Structure formats: C-alpha cells, structure tokens
Length: 113
Length: 113
Image (cartoon, each protein chain N blue to C red):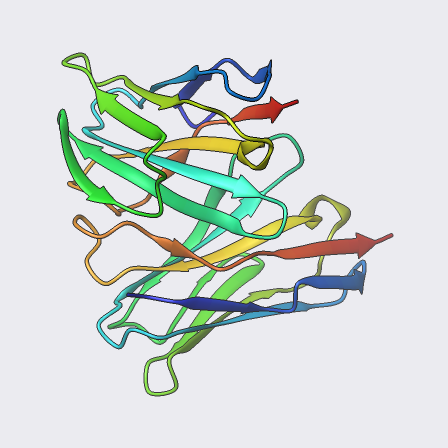
C-alpha cells in the first residue's frame, strides 16, 4: 500500500520568511495530493491540493509542487505570519473516491514574530 | 466550521470499558471515515463507510467496530479499552464516493485511565 514520508517534523521560521515542507510517496499510482493544516484543538483543514496532471498550484501565499518522476511533493508558504503556526499534514491517494487518504506524520510549524 | 459534527468532545473512561463515538457528516456527504491520531503516529486510517456500507478498512483493531446508519451518521465503538487506545479520534466526510476532499470534525479526545 501507499506510504507517505514527511519532513521535517518541526520547523521554526521568522515571521516574513518562507517555509517549505516536503513529502515523498511510494505508490506510483497515487494521483491526488492534498495538504491539511491542523490548529490546536481543531480537526485538520484542507488548505490546498494538487493532482498528478499538474506540476504546480498556487493559492495566495501557499503553493504546492509535484514531481511525479521523483515521487515527491512540497508545500511552500511565503511571507509567513504567526497565524500560520500549526501542524501541517501531506497526504496521498491513488483513487480519490475509492481509496482513503494516507497521511504523513505531520510538520509542526512555528512562526516567530 | 467544516460541517462535520463529532460527539462527545472529550471522553474519560477506564481500562476494559466500552465507549461509542458519534459522527454526523456534512449535509449530502455519503462517505464517512474514521481516523485515529496519536502523538507519534500521525493520522491513521481506521475504516470508511459509503452510504451505509463498509468501503475500506485500515489498521482497525478487532476490538473496534463501526457502522453507518440510514440517516448517514456513523458510530465508532471501542471495547475492552486499553491504555494505548488513548488518542484523538477524528471523523471525516466526503461527497463523491471516497477520498475526495475530506472534511474533518473537531475530534473526540479519548483518555483511558
């Protein structure tokens, strides 16, 4: 089955700097890659997703890139703000609609004001 | 607010006991998923239901069971509880079969003493 590795497990950045979180997946059939943000005391919330037919997707200060050949994808957050502090999870699935998401173990991002 | 409702928010019980966690999906969503989140293991998929029927099974213990009712709400039953079952249990729902854009509830924090 699918296995998703996520790095780093913790990340501290200064406010205004960029943050990058990287994930690798094992199943070459995976074609849907969402990112979730989990704030303290809340459930994970979808912030951006990408499909395998797209190499990059951007939404304001966040972007995701996908390298299918290397089987890795990354989350980029620019101009970080204190409210970006949270745990971020990457995930992958081969058949959205039929196969549950497999999540990485998460990255705790701290943005220092 | 994701639209997914989980009750109770907190549950404290003793080893050997049985508890039931409840989830109401977003209006119109047919799929319900259960995930377990512990400190070092991230989000582990337990089980998925689609329109009342079991669709996929993950690392769910035999002591755990779930069902989805005709009104689409779901219950996760945990029995013969052990200390190691202490975790945050999330329910998520999606609208198109399974796996597509999961929306998570705020979770049930289970503490087994």
